[in-house]
Length: 230
Length: 80
Image (cartoon, rainbow over all chains, first blue to last red; front, side):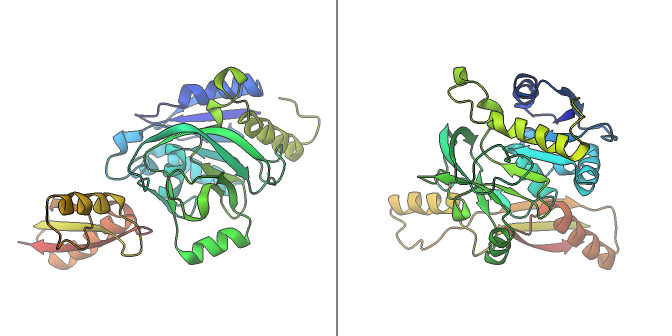
């Protein structure tokens, strides 16, 4: 399986994301610069956190127009696995690949600490190794992670099982329905504010994020037949 | 031609920044401030004299980039 980690000017979780792939599943992974115009060789696209383009205008607003994003849209439409974390989630909402938007935390504070996350949908390609309803510990690090969508969109998210993670316990940012992560309708595109790539070893305080990576590898293997190992 | 674009947070979307500024104004004794909403003001200089075209183009700019219509409203004025 081959992973791409998209790198925008201002991405800063790209190295963590790359190493999380190496450490958890040991599959092939490349950094792909925002100017790239071909992602056809990749099975999963990871959009990492950071402050792409300095968060100018709005978080993710400029990044969603980078050349590589047309390829990410294409990959998503083809059913390839796409994961956006933190700023990557913001980029995917700005790009229209996920519904809603992420606004300033209601506390106005940058929140940077581990949170409890409830797995609301353990059937997506990125969460299938978790138990439905399981609570895991993964850190957040954001100032604008307050998920917003209108009531109609929220009803749709609930009806289609598109809410992937919610905050367990105190809502750290004011997100609608305590939403921490969602998927698109097809389920192959997932965006989340918490950082699973920062929780792949007990030495980091938690290894609960590792299953995001093993999940997608298993999903890919299932899709491509059990014989595929690489 | 000059376009002045105003991007504001939708009425039903929380504006924590506005709330904080309102609190600070009240601390200063401006108790009459019932609500504060913070938005963006942008000035665009356009290389065109055709008002109808500018109107259409600036609207497209707002829809595609300048505002996120999930959470923001926009309006603009054309001058010159």
